[in-house]
Length: 149
Image (cartoon, rainbow, N blue to C red; front, side, top):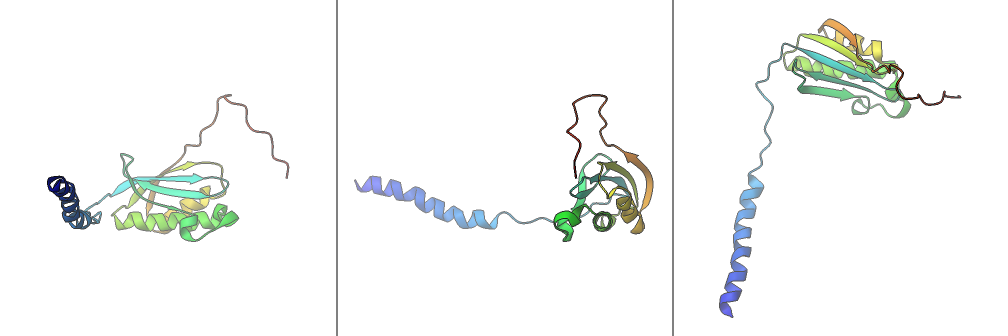
């Protein structure tokens, strides 16, 4: 009987011994040493928000920003001014990684389309090309009914 009690307590003691080591193991690593001279800026301008994402030329995300992240709430997230602030914020983060020239790809029908490009250019980043990648149906699904305001 005493043997069984020893066997039961042994795994518990082993778990207690491993717990402090496991808690100390995960350390936060900083993303250092990245240098990306050119990349792609994706601007998603919806009716409710504007999102700006900077990627390298392979499509790996480097940094991003949105209206809510910059302190805009509710309907103010969808304004042109919010889009300009969001784009400038994301561009500053990308410049910290060494990005100097960027290709802008705009997606969506929102109010922040042009002002987001202006926000990127205002940080001193060179805009090489502007592409509109908004999906356009070739007579696919039936669209929703027209809004009555």
